[in-house]
Image (tube, rainbow, N blue to C red; front, top):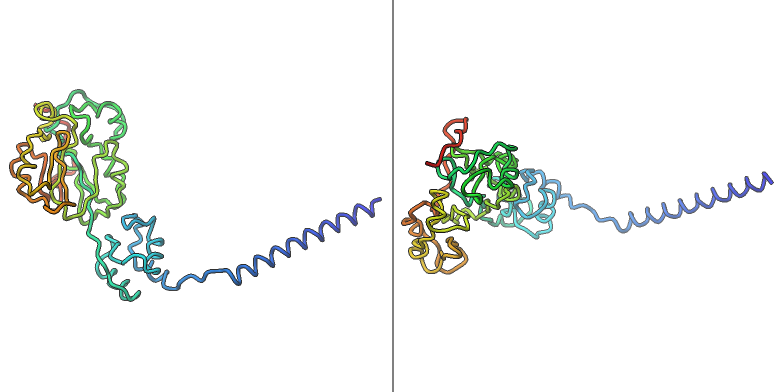
Length: 289
């Protein structure tokens, strides 16, 4: 009886070994005939890219973007982070045109800050915009405006955002990669990524208008409509009490649209939206007045 069990075990081992060898052979043959050779250019192109993996090009990282470049599906200029020399080198190596992609920059749809926004209460909770926003905007009169607790600056892995003395985020155009991290982290959806050429910016997101808006924040839009009247064609129009800027229409917005704004809610940008802080220390919150 013992001999029979031993024979059965030996048979089972033989069968399993045979099955293993069969599948190993199948996998080896499949690898031999079905494998896809990696394009040797891929590694070279990836080395020439900045390696930031910021996603501004629309791909999840530089490796994926390199793959698209090698396949000819995108142009090197789609990367707005690499310097001109690197882009030229990639284009020359692949035998393609550099192409062009306009630089995009994160902008803040708010100009409130210390001394501009009325305080309703003193916020003493967690030092986070998301936490303060839950508590009715951290005690600010405008609960739709920038809370100023640096979530965006902390989220920016490229150190492109600093806080000025009014506790407003300052975006450094040269460092901004348009990755969108600040857009994602802002609990009030105050950041927007715009082409650098879009220089007319509305710095207010309040649903209120007129005296009520200005009573809460000195730089709020008062819905006077002067910007829409002064802008070429229909490049700026008033929608629900706030100006909406259109760059996709025949007439393009010009600086004139901002000249008669009584509060500074709509501005013409040249580089940075706000000034950088003159000192490292941030001023304590002041009383509105």
